[in-house]
Image (cartoon, rainbow, N blue to C red):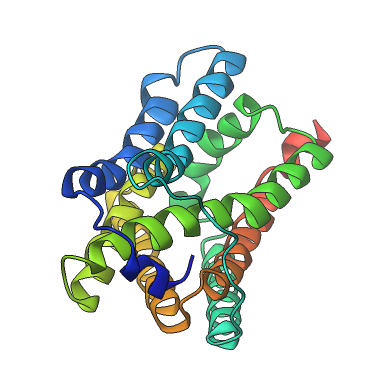
Length: 244
């Protein structure tokens, strides 16, 4: 899944690229908004199906349209140190922001919807939550890097220069996070926008790392560190659920 292999393959059709940009937002809208009042089990089934559809898009398009097979991405140490440093810096910033908001109405009003979502996901026990966190940090982050950087970002590089590809793909990457953030911070549009812009900046750094290293691994390592920090925060927030 290197950049050079991307450049050798046929161009990604513009309509497929556009669909790939909006599909994750549609998936998130289905789960966080349209299916929010459905039974928890039904929500999980809908979410799982939608995620399979999303992450299958690059595989199906590569196999059907290009008649090629996806290979295992090559390992590259180039940019790995930068990826780790960025991931740790973001993790530290998240914890600093969290502690700075302790006792503030901005955070207190977000606690109820966050804990309700944890209950709906059926992970209101320490073991269940940790298992989910490990899955998202290790595997879901890898799938997102494969989807957003290898498929979407590299597809855009076939049409626009590096800077524009980074900007457009990163804004698309942040779009579905807006839906998630709004579910928790509807009382503070400013915080929703701020955090969404932070996500876009993170996506931009990971796209740049991918372009620099010609491998998704440096961005993935960085991404998993950030996701691990987010779930560690979630574990702290979910404390009352575990003791209840």
